[in-house]
View (cartoon, rainbow, N blue to C red):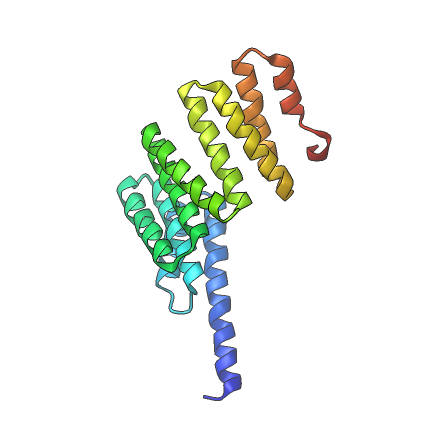
Length: 205
């Protein structure tokens, strides 16, 4: 095989991996979780997927299993994702996998375990200054505090998340957090602050 044909073959395989990811994400958006899981399973096994692709696919697969209601499979896959990320020395992948593990525990009602996993994920993300992961984790910590009825603590976490998303220019995510903040202020009876949060700052309108 010539160098040119080898290069062309590699490009074809790379495109195939990208196509799998795109198909899986489209299935997610459309709520076709069985199809999404099948694509992620294929991606994990794909010979041309690079290590980062496989780490991401394991995490996404765990989330797909959770959406299917298969909590046991979700935990198994996510534990494998944490182990693989640890072996690869990827702190970012570890933080993201731990975040999804926490989501599984949160949806199962184990808020103590969820908070513990979120905090572990946050410490890991903080160690590499992963601003996007920190914003996401802070939002989730705010949600846990809100479920517990600790509204002040929820607001503290939500405001950290909002600052992170705004610094990154992630307008859609920032808008979601503002909605969380509005709900929290409503729970406290601080309706003016709630209205202000719902309206959002000028740069997010």
